[in-house]
Image (cartoon, rainbow over all chains, first blue to last red; front, side, top):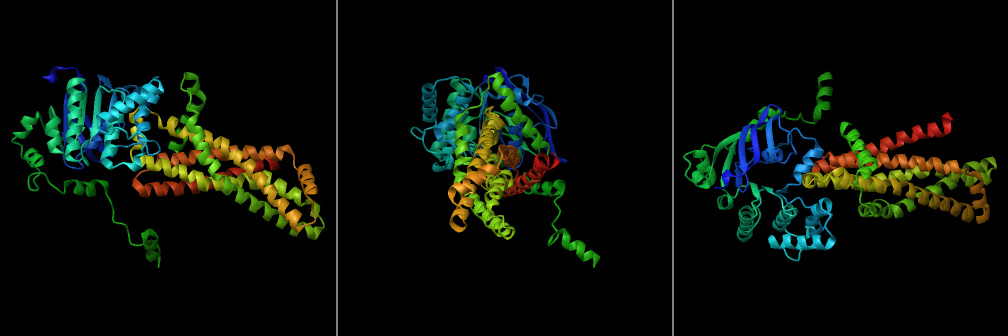
Length: 284
Length: 246
């Protein structure tokens, strides 16, 4: 099993609060080399926040995140950049630079961080685009391609520097079933063949069970369940069963996040016509 | 305000210190931004400057005629343009056109996760996005100001030759005789300071956008208003230093 490999990510007692509300409340887990960890959970359960802490773009309230054995929560921006060269990230929307073409987007990390010649870079860009099934799309701009294509270009860009670790935020949402299978296969090939480690946030249960070597389910800011895909399938936990089978009824409260939002963000109803009106009203 | 100061410090680092540590800024994006910020604004600047030149000459004609001092019309047009109207009005045009565009562009990039994507690719957004825009603005606003000054003087000439009793040679001689190089330089110093104000406020507004499309709209408006106010106040301060206190 790949779980014996070197530890790539170590998250310990991670807590992140927005105001009084703990979005992440003491999360701990490890990811080893060659593993594919799928993080799942309902909308607003803190998956994206967790991911942002792992890539070092958010600082935790307390707790630690170690990538490749280095503590990134205490690092300065310059040091974080050095660690970031070792991983790639696929954003939910693809996050392509709209001012550049598809080819330039994929070439960007290579241009910025390597001393490769333009011909070599062109070769790599072609190869990466081919991997995601977009041969010949180099000269189009992101406006001219569909959402699913953008996401695949985003994946090609994340893989441009041959990272040891790949973070994906919903890699398959918005893709058709065939493309989903292609992207999953690519992830499997990279994790098995090139010993890449992948951390995937996903709602897509078919894809999640296809690629995962281990799964984590988040809920109310902590880990509800953790295990291999088989263990999750057979989990006695009713929340896990409800989530992976997509049932509307079950122990997961649907309106929880909204209520919490009201309680803790303290959104006051706006006075009609604004405060000024009330002020005048009181005086008269 | 804290963000704004941080942006300025980081900008200074990337322009003054980083090139000596081997991270020299790329030239191509600067030229792209120069075309966008400067060259594309030229027609608007020309129209504004021409109108201002014409207006100044007409007002001067009206007031100076009653004193019997029509010969000083070119002096007035020239000095007013070089010292005040040129730098200020062209800065206004550039704020409205280029400053707002930069704020909106960076703001859109922020809300569509592009800035975050750059950071995750270990590309510093200040180095990659702000530096080219900053350098382009620092070059192009003074250049546009010189260009606008010419066009404004042309507007004054048009009024003087076609509606008043000047001939071209008389206008040019009078204009050149009255203005001093310091009049031009003071205007240039102003436009360099304005360029700094405009582009840092626009970039800061864009990079600190929060909350989707609405946030981008608010940031763009805020950048225009803040830049206008800061620019006009700074103009008063600089005029005070250059022409009043000395």
